[in-house]
Length: 174
Image (cartoon, rainbow, N blue to C red; front, side, top):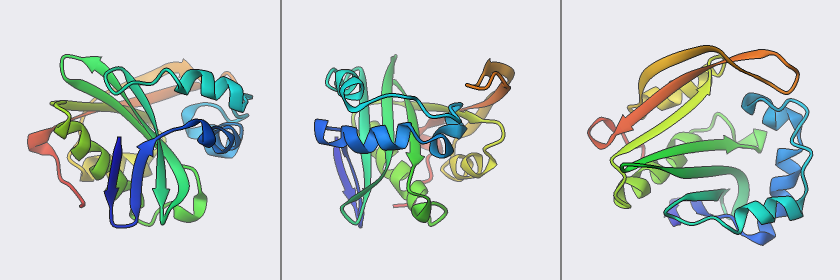
């Protein structure tokens, strides 16, 4: 994928991105919302081994750039029957809460609908109300809440909100 809108670019992750991804993924303050408050303890080689098998029809890790600089990551996974599961993380704190996420998600979602997907799904931590607000602005519908459905790195039970979006409900910010 290579999608551009204004100063936002979403592109496939490459080998050269593994150093930055390792820095983000090993930072517990960045990874806490994903359940890894102590980071992933990974390295560039392990990340590349995983990313190099990405394909548009299965799974794709993406780099989110703003003004030609990496500020975060996105991903999509083909769940079959024209459903894509997505994820986003703006890792650079000085780029959070500036409207970039809703535009980047709009760009990703538009691209996925253009690729033939008819439904987009995602989940987020129940405590991540900021993300929930953005998803709902985009038109995502809450399909359920899974209370105490998994344990984070520290053994704490975590709850998740599930969302889905169809093209007819999509409110783009582009």
